[in-house]
Amino acid sequence: MYNIALIPGDGIGPEIIREGKKVIKAASSHYGLKINWTEYPFGAEHYLKTGELLPDSALKEIEDMDAIYFGAIGDPRVKPGILEKEILLKTRFYFDQYINLRPIRLYKGVPCPLKDKSPEDINFYVVRENTEDFYVGIGGRFTARSHQDHLEVLRKLYKTKIQVDFHLEQEEEMGYQVGLISRPGTQRVIKYAFELAKKKNLKRVTSVDKANVLTNIYGLWRDIFNEVASQYPDIETEFTFVDAITMWLVRKPEWFKVVVAPNMFGDIITDLGAMIQGGLGIAAGGNINPEGISMFEPIHGSAPKYKDKSVANPIATILAGAMMLDCLGESKVTQAIEEAVEKVLSEGKVRSRDLGGNSSTVEVGDEVVKKLGELG
View 1 (spheres, rainbow, N blue to C red):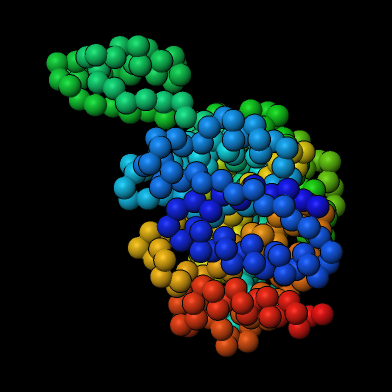
View 2 (view 1 turned 45 degrees about the horizontal axis):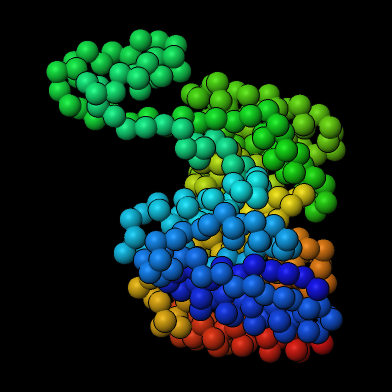
């Protein structure tokens, strides 16, 4: 039996989570698993009614569970950043989910925006560092006249005198954000990428950075990548800048096997990856702590304008559920769900609106359950 925390969230979140849960229930029943779901209300509606975002007491309770299944977060009635930082990011940091894992896979029957590319060409993983880099929240906004302390911080950080004298007679606003990576934080994510390549028998790991300009932070990243790579002599390695990989993911996606990137760059290239695999409706992700509690979700947003219309594609959420079960060691159940999804997509008889069809969210979920039954 597995105890799973369920956070449907906002917008289309409850609808897609409902279908994901339905598929997991069907697959688990077939393989003799029991899932004990504990649902939490955290999201925009709860916040607007109670003023509560995500209390530490709930996180403490989730510590005793096996995983988190997450829908989507975000609502136009709430200022951007509040729900995202205080629910989603707070969970990631609390459970030290230092890996963001994104399979980039084009399924047969799914239209690809890249000319002449097939499912054989788009099938790789992006391993994104998930708790450091520019997401650590160090920085501020200030005016030169009223916040000399910020200026002093900047001078020390950049080891040079920042010329701001012309601002002192004005109230010009400034802002800065500091990126930070640590040796242990970088080692563990890069090692995870190499172990993934080894497990999946993939022979190349590509490192992404911007070490030609941001030499201090990403120079360290490169040094650590080389150190870890030396422990895996059978795996080919390469470096690429973030701007270059956005070009090559479009031009030659078949080259990539496992890509490992710092937090911000990984955030960018995984959205590009979602597009070349056919869209956000198919893109699943995992926020993983290999030694602790992980959280699985579709990578798309809450799409509030489609709320309660049953037009959202639940495939990404279903595949995120499959990733969750795989992380829990239930590889047979994972394989069954993935095969069922493949059959639904390749046949194309039941297809959501984003993929050119007119099937409802519920109909897509029902069809995946049906295919699970046919697999025996």
